[in-house]
Length: 179
Image 1 (cartoon, rainbow, N blue to C red):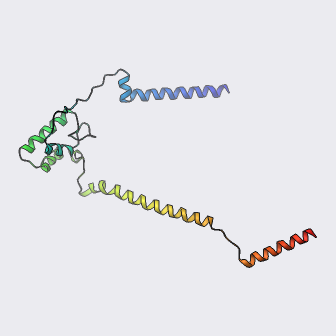
Image 2 (spheres, rainbow, N blue to C red):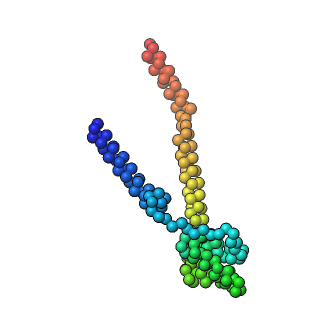
């Protein structure tokens, strides 16, 4: 029993140490650990974007944040990109031309919505195809399961003549047993 208790204590201690290391490695844990974190610059809320600038900026990905649009990103680069978008739109360029400029500079990944052409069609079609295949599979397996259940519940009843023969045989054997 002592070896088991010692092994359990060792395992728990190892788990606690591993959990502490993971917590310290996380951004929140690093901040609690006393390491200096650089807060993201906040975008002033009183700055309102021209609706056309906001529309184009909301369709472009911030190269630094990558999970935010240029319209939502608080980084300095996103601020510069918004200013460049405003400048290009004020110069008379179309929103498509502005997006094409950023696409040539950063590549197609800068677009939050991939183009619907060529290989990029897979990005749009695969989720729909996956849902359809999954739906068909669910229907198929559900019907198959229901059929198996019905087959298992189906009671096989003997032919009437067999039941009569069996009943007569039992009655005869009971009479012989009593006699």
